[in-house]
Length: 86
Image (cartoon, rainbow, N blue to C red; front, top):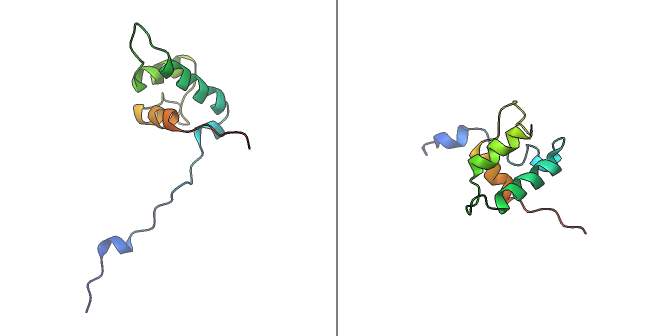
C-alpha cells in the first residue's frame, strides 16, 4: 500500500484570483504615484517601500481594508510592468 501524501489532500492554491492594483478604483493613478515617489530621491536617497506606503496614505490611497499599504504591497506595485499599447 502506498502512503498518501498529506499535501495532496489540501485544496489547490487559487492563483491570479485577486484584482491587480491598477484595476482598483483610482488604482492607475495610485500605481503611477507610487512609481514616481520611488523613482525620485529625497535628500539624495531613494524612498523605501515603507516611505512610499506612508506617502500613499497621506495622499489618501489606502488598501481595501482601509489601512495603509504594506511594504510588500508597495514592492509588488513597483515591480508590476505597465501594460503597453497594442
